[in-house]
Amino acid sequence: MTSTTPTPLTVLDGAAVADWIRRTSQLISAHADELTALDAAIGDADHGANMKRGLAAAVDALASQPQAPAAVLKQTAMALISKVGGAAGPLYGTFFLRMSTACAGKDALDVDSLAAAVAAGVGGIVQRGSAEAGDKTMIDAWNPALEALNAAAADTSSLAQAVAAAAAAADSGRAATEPMPAKKGRASYLGERSIGHIDPGAASTALIVQALADVVSGSAAGEA
Image 1 (cartoon, rainbow, N blue to C red):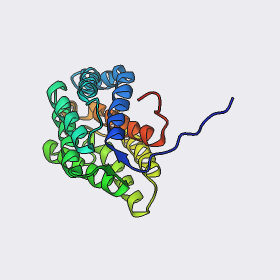
Image 2: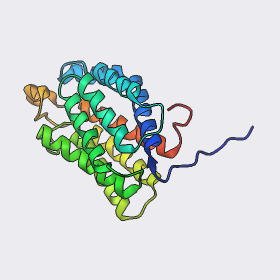
Image 3: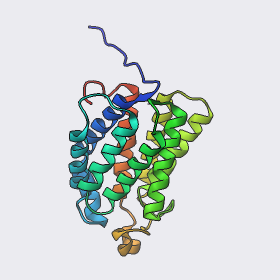
Image 4: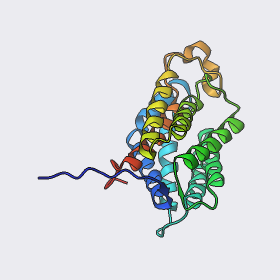
């Protein structure tokens, strides 16, 4: 028996962005209980269930015909805003909506345009949530992911190398929230007692970025 090595994507067209949303929904669904357990320790205990419902709605909203990246991202934003409760829905909705705006008029995203779109999305989260690095929020995973993308763009790395680096950076950012005291949201009410728990928003962010890496590398083929 011979095995076929997946061919990594060199750009993200609308179909690939739709696959990203489908893969994200898969990973969030698979880790929903874990996300809810993280949220139970320092929040409302509903992050996993909320994100699972929101991403399922985003997948349902995907058009059967290929669309431009901006259209897919906007539909995803609207689904998350309408279906995900708490702070996560507006924050992730803003992320994808700002990405959509940054992608307007583009048929496909290369490393540079992807980094610019993610930068716009992260900027939207910062603006809406008023969070900074070290506050123990999803920003602590998004910031290192964006830095990795920007570094890859500057080094003229391939798209696959860029998103793989971003996924690794987001995962490290997720882990780095464990020793932090929370300074934003319900977790901040716990003060020092929030130390020792991974932020659920940083955890879901790491899954979103991993989903992107899976699609670009081709490892999600047949699953997305």
